[in-house]
Length: 345
Image 1 (cartoon, rainbow, N blue to C red):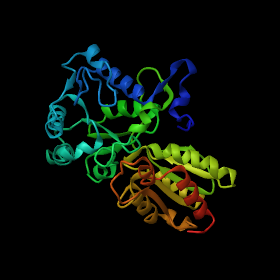
Image 2: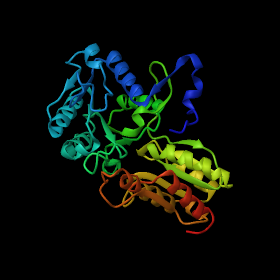
Image 3: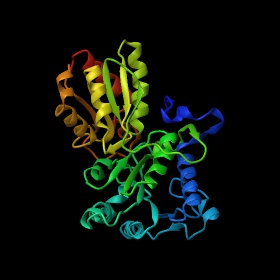
Image 4: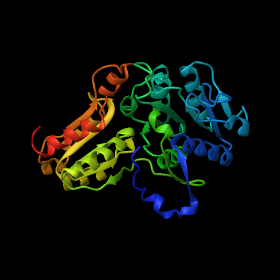
């Protein structure tokens, strides 16, 4: 993965306060800190105990914190999610892990009809501070039912906050921030990112939900990207620089609520916008970003049509070459941005 610039928050930490961690290790560290510091926190999910989670994220936390805090749930996403929502409504701080984000479909009733609406329907007298983690995305050869990017589904629902950390730093800090939020927070973690590494502060810190970050400054085009596409966009920006195109790359981080100010300010500066995301292009987060710009004064600054680079309108194939072809790659970003800047689209 491309090494990103430090976040603004990271700059306050001294070198001795930072340690290199993988994305998965950073999440595990956050879970460990949360379990240690707050007795209300519990972990729930299928095979998260002795097995350590489908992607080995929870690791050996069950041995440190016990089976009453790290709870293996039956193979019932609807039931497990329902227990987590109920636990949150009655004072606990549950973190529920789905084995794959695809399996959230089995629990949409609890997520969208209960967790998202309970605070509203009870006049604000009850909050549902549940955190749900979704391993998502393609690239592992897991085929159509285990490789989807469904964050836009949940971002469509009022009452839910939806985040997509792209770095180990943000994976830890945003998870800890999610635990302090009174509302349900859905965290989509790209499976390919679990082994990526970066510098992470020791101990407790938070990264704000709802705030995007400019990962690379530029003047010719704004690229708004999410999750793993942030890394691909940064790699593409390096190649574009070699041909004289200066690309500004924004890591959206949070897709509900969206950081309008950062995106709109960048578009006013560069006068071009490209949205890059792995989920299916149709009705995806890129459509929302595009509409947001079109409905603002930033639209008057555009010198070219808005370009969306999203996944193909097809289930994710098993074949590795077809799998790559179904989602944007670095070359797709380079070609799309180049054509946009040169007025060829």
